[in-house]
Amino acid sequence: MNQNIIIRNISVVDEKAQSDKCYDIYICDGIIKTVGIAPEDASALVIDGTGLTAFPSFFDMHVHFRDPGFTHKEDIITGSAAAAAGGVTGVLCMPNTNPPVDSEETINYIREKAAQTGIDVYQTACITSGMKGEKLADFDMYKRLGVAAVSDDGKPVKNAELMRQALINAEETGLLVTSHCEDMDIIGKGIMNKGAVSEKLGVAGMDRASEDSITAREIALAGAAGTRVHIAHVSTEGSIGFIRDAKKRGLKVTCETCPHYFIFTEEKLLARDADYRMNPPLREKRDIDAVAEAVMDGTIDCIVTDHAPHAADEKSDFEKAPNGVVGLETSFAATLTYLYHTGKITLQKISELMSENPRKLLGLEPVYIREGSTADICIADINREWTVDPDRLHSKSHNTLFKGITLKGKPVLTISKGKIIFSEMKS
Ligand code: DOR
Ligand code: ZN
View 1 (cartoon, helix red, strand yellow):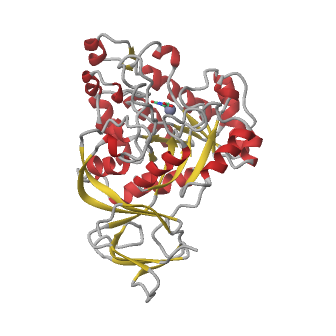
View 2 (cartoon, rainbow, N blue to C red):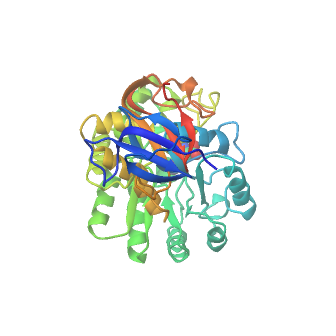
View 3 (cartoon, protein in one colour):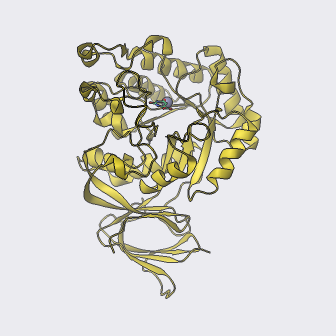
């Protein structure tokens, strides 16, 4: 049984809590028993929460843990440690492993390994067998095994009729479809956003139409079929326009973005450093402004990381490196720094984007800092400044685009089901 915990005198982020007040949180047997004044419990671990803030722990619905097959980049255990350090106690993994996640054997392998982590690891399985884009995988089998969503993340399902069938089957089975919206033919040999910087560097670019066109297609397909569709890692002004319009029309379209899409532009690529390369790529000023605006007005439902670890030697050649950046340990801090401390969104809104909405989208019970809720808590010092040192990350890979950047705010203690799984508390 877990040790009971009392966190004294802490600010609480919850709709029902007053932001100018401090509370004691009493955790008993993994459940929040009191938010108010803690009862006497001589056996409890007492934590001084003065100056700190308690958030419902975060849920990242877009991560790549590379396990099985690419465990030199990350594995389920190290990925979960990175999550814990970011205040994240639940993740949804993408299926582009080796083999890709489309069989009972692979799903069971992941589930058994995930049980050794202190966090909730959910799995997305492939839409098409082997992610080959040829035939739909067995969604009934997925559902039976507890798979939460389907995606061919890394690319879209090229054949629109196959995608339409996938949306219909997934709706019937109760699986969320997450679509990676990039037309691979438009991308061609592109390695970064097509624009002034790619031209300056003399490298092939990815035209923004690659993203806009597939986003529009998915909305059209889901709209006509009356199904849900979730648009992954939105990065363009154009995509946002289509999604905002779809929501206005009452379609069941949801979407996510990553911190780098509201913070950095293609200018970062001028250093010819592959740590700034990902799919979709960093875009332009008008795009990061549009993404921030869409986070503020509710067009964007969730902030995710697209945590995509790659080894240092793989990232060493600017033009040949694989795309992707790690993000689990910086996502909350970056969101605080660039959206909260700039006055664009509230702490409650961060909680909705990073904790409540992703869990709801997947049909999971949201966690709150309330009596009776599971004790899944991120305790943060929202004013602590720290400089991101890639070598100090818990992830096996260090390809962070926040390297050397000073962020304001940091998780200092993460509690998963009443158990402390990460602590950086100063004693
Ligand atoms: O940059 C990316 N990397 N985008 C993706 O969609 C896939 C990911 C990966 O698996 O490395
Ligand atoms: Zn993707």
